[in-house]
Image (tube, rainbow, N blue to C red; front, top):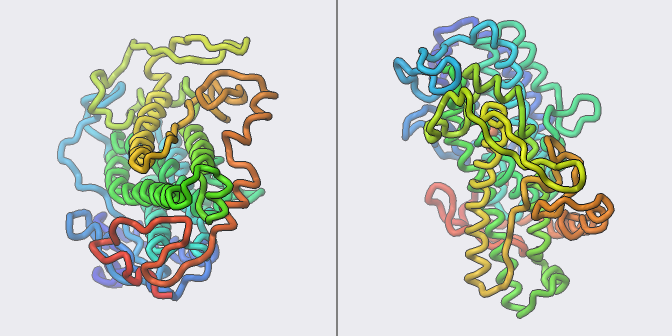
Length: 474
Ligand SMILES: [Fe+2]
Ligand SMILES: [Fe+2]
């Protein structure tokens, strides 16, 4: 195969043509990936032309080229952000030393496990969203779903590249396993819980892209600081694509809210049953979905106090997001305070080292970032003159990992008895009836520019195209 063919098939800036061994490994993996896409990717849209963005380079012109592509022909490429000559490690015990171009032997299995865990989430979300195309509320949304799907596919490629290029035979085996585990599979599930949750409605999809893709953003930000330079550069580039996924989530939830506000105004009511009868999703139900996906994503950061997280930090593997913004990048002796259950239904303070608290620091940064969208959604509610306010629950609420796992609290984080939680959880989290109602609204709309009744149109189209553009040719 000539260099030009290879570049056309697997666009890359890692000089794949000059590395025969790597090229062979990836060419061997590619058919397995395409089989996986065919079996586990978006069902039934193989022949549709989709108006997609493809990355063919990391510069301003190359990273977002738009055009119609059938998804199986999407060019999944491998891109690392440009190398900074002389880059130094910016945190931990190796701070100030030159960044690593290869993985040091003693950290090899840790890096491999973390790369596999990150890599596993990428195809998992494609699998979760596999059937959503059938109920897309518009062609614009259908296109956005597929854009997210092909980019998660590319993120899998990014992690597989690292495994192939830096982890030898173990890496190649792990790359195959990434296609063998499947979301929700009872025998071989995906590694992390959230990525095995079924996704059968678009409100969940928007919540997932807002809250769970944002967890991805924070993981990538932490890896973007890594002493292992190829990992850092891979994640830096992935972040450019990830931003669009969260945009889909934020504007998606925002449009659902806007439509609901319109219906409430038209009917002059805040009676949720009337809002539902009119085919919109009532605000309390939206809040419940928010509570579910936010808390489910909080668990992805791990335990508040974690010696693993401390080791990752000490050893230059993973930093805090935007490490440069913190004053001390070594945190040798520093401490911080956590609030944990006291075992008697109350709360007590616990002092831990900052290194042990990296997960919690990252989680709180994440929660702050999540609040930015919530504030915007609330502005729309306020402008509509409706006395309602969305609020993210406490990071203690409905946790399944860490100090608060199995310790019931109300959404404000006040410890309560298990019986009270059971009695009230239907007010706080989506009930079966809520989910069934949302699902009942999921009707496919395929006329360009038209929207399903439960969602407002977007403010603008993709890549300066009009909203009425035929984003998917079915
Ligand atoms: Fe991703
Ligand atoms: Fe994503």
